Length: 66
Image 1: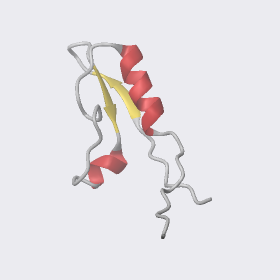
Image 2: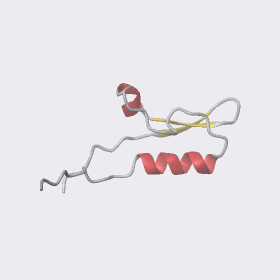
Image 3: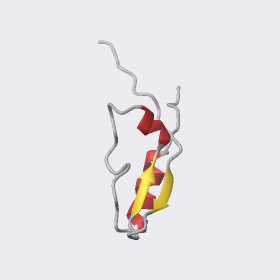
Image 4: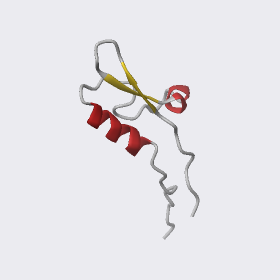
């Protein structure tokens, strides 16, 4: 099983005390920005969850031929 490249997001707090999950890998690929990345979030817990889920290793989907 082959794994996808893992992004390395960072959790940043803005001056207005909101949190942002910043991912340099997603910024380079502007065609597909995942939900929650580079968006202000009020709750640190939610931002941590988005950050954790974004960097999770997932198998590459395999298309089965019939």
